[in-house]
Image (cartoon, rainbow, N blue to C red; front, side, top):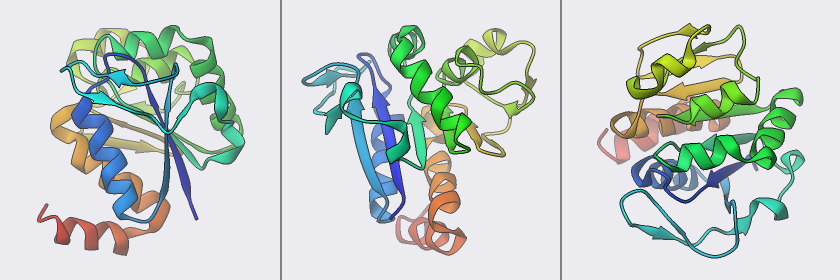
Length: 180
């Protein structure tokens, strides 16, 4: 069974995190929600989530993909945490998928895993993505790097992750069932 780590920091964007978690689980993909600290994590719109584990309790080797939701200040917390950067770097080094949406592609840049890759992000952080092959597509896939624009593209992003891990038939079936 394919497995995904979704990393949550205080101030995460709820739509981006919950949509990805929900859609991947509907596709029978094992999802572990890992908080940067113990206990509940509150998003940028005051919705609180109880992660399955803490970041310290998981290892990159146990996952096929890592997903970073955006949101502010959640993205800042992810980018500033050396454990997150190390986790992302190890995933990339192992040829596994590193995925981020909204402002979180800046974390991938800070971890040094998007050089030479096509990427996108929320327009608010586009300036921070200077020097990269920046696109304005809603979802951009370049090898094992997957990025997306923001809350409004979360469903497309999640379905693309399903397409990658479970195949196009599963992604199409889910899209049909959810009337996407």
